[in-house]
Length: 218
Image (cartoon, rainbow, N blue to C red):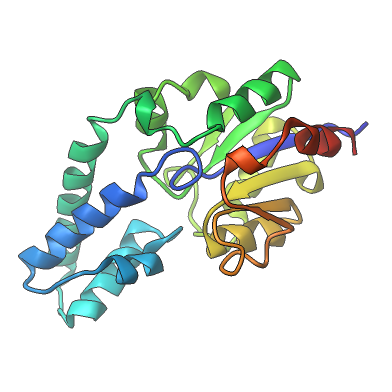
């Protein structure tokens, strides 16, 4: 039996921090004199902070000097951190702990692969940090998803071949990154949106222990 590993994205998979990103971007947009909708926020899923700000400024047709750009990136993050500072275990999405417990009981290596630069403090706030054998986030990577870098680093840190890794993702770019890494991609969310994933589930309540065990034994 080949050694397997399980890699989780953070936002929208383990916790729903996307709502806090949205509120922070919305505040910045309002400060700059335009509206930012939840529909527009869909473009930000799985995208780096820098790229998000570029998209936001395009939406508002706002020109920025490099100094302004850097200042707004910092301001957005400060607002976002104020929200996540209040997070606790109630923010963990349904059945995530059951899945993590099952994997830990069966001695499976677990990693986080996220674009977030705040992954560790978030996992700490919600009490999940101890589950993870490796954490690869926006502080460790130079290329954003759909580039597979974040997942390949995670696999390397866990000492597992890429084709023996299973990735849980809620964003199209993340699914593409997992596929580009030659890993088994599991979409968490809308089947029509995440159709490139090998399997798609609405949420973790639909993933039973047998499904995970099949992968472990395959």
